[in-house]
Length: 246
Image (tube, rainbow, N blue to C red):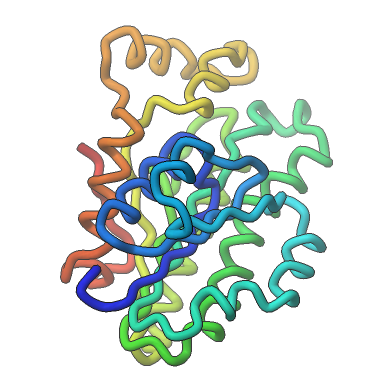
C-alpha cells in the first residue's frame, strides 16, 4: 500500500488498539489523521507531520458534525490514491441490566459506538471519491454475535457495525471495500474497566480476570499490526465480517 500515496483516518488513536493501529499504519508509510479526545505525544514525536492529530469527542454528535463541516477531512484525503477509515473508538459502558443503565450513558455509548462510525463512513466515502482504492474498517467484537449478560448496549452496538458492513458491501460503491472485524481480547483500559465492574452488573467478570492473570490478552501493538496487515491485504473486503483474533 505505501507504494501509492495513502492516507488513513483512525478514531481513538491515542491509546490501546487505536494507538497500535496508527503506529502500524505510520510504519507502513501511510499518513494518519487521528481523531480522539487525547493525543499520542510519543507517536507524534516519532513521525512528525506524517501524523495529524485532532482532539474530538466522537460521543458528541454536534461536535462531530461541526468538524466534518469544517472540511478538514476533505483536505486531508485530497489527492490520496488510497484512502482508509478505521472506526476504532468505542466504549463498553454502561455495563449492567437495563434497570441499572443511566440514560445519558446509553446515549453516549450509542453515539460513540454506532452514530460516529456511520457518520464518518458516509463523510469519508464522499471525501475520498477521487481515490483509486478506498477501505472502511469497523473494529467489532465477538460480542457482536455472542450475547453477554450486562453488555446489552455494547453487544447491540457491535452487531450494528457488522450489519452496516454487510449492507454497505451490497451497495457495491466504486473502489470501496468494507469489513467489520473482531480483533480478539486486547490488554487495554477497556479491559481494566471490565475487571473493575462488580459481578452484580457483569456476571462474566471472573472469566476476564482469569484471562488477564493467565496472560491471554493480546498486546495492543501486536494486535494493531495484525489488524493493519489484514486491512492492507488483498483479503480485505472479501467478506464484510471477519475475525482476526490470534
